[in-house]
Length: 191
Image 1 (cartoon, rainbow, N blue to C red):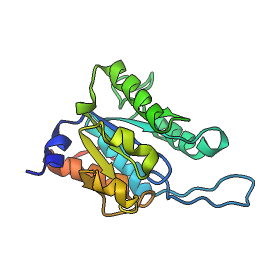
Image 2: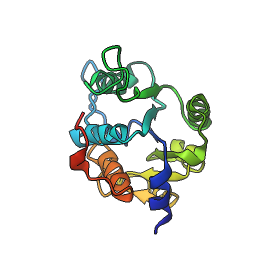
Image 3: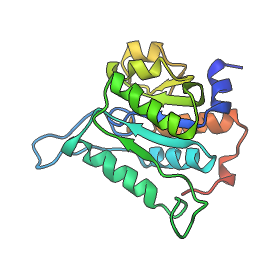
């Protein structure tokens, strides 16, 4: 069995970059806001991971208005009917967002999240696409990258998705985890 499949069976947390992973690695300029695009497949991928008990946290270098898109996306995830709330105390744990964290600060954010839950980097996967993600990719047990990630990043990752960031990369990761664990996605709630 591939080492990434063995790691996929035991991870408890999926850490993820924002731009280049959840969103396409492009930005539409000239408007009064930064327009970013993402695939609904990736949103479903996050839901599938949460449905099987994997906690999700986004760690991004973006901040201020540049982080508006990921802030809005995380808020939507946390408002889904299956998310934890007063009316659903046994729902999926909330997706967490760390902003303004690049390089070593990504490791600090990941460490804080892991410590809060009593986990280690051996319990974690991280998907990143560029050099700012490398320190954290080198720490987790399951480093992952989207198809369009920089070649140097893809080379250090155990799993590389078939699709680009913002175009289904997270869903590819979720599908791989489900397959490694022998879970039929049709048995899981969609949201």
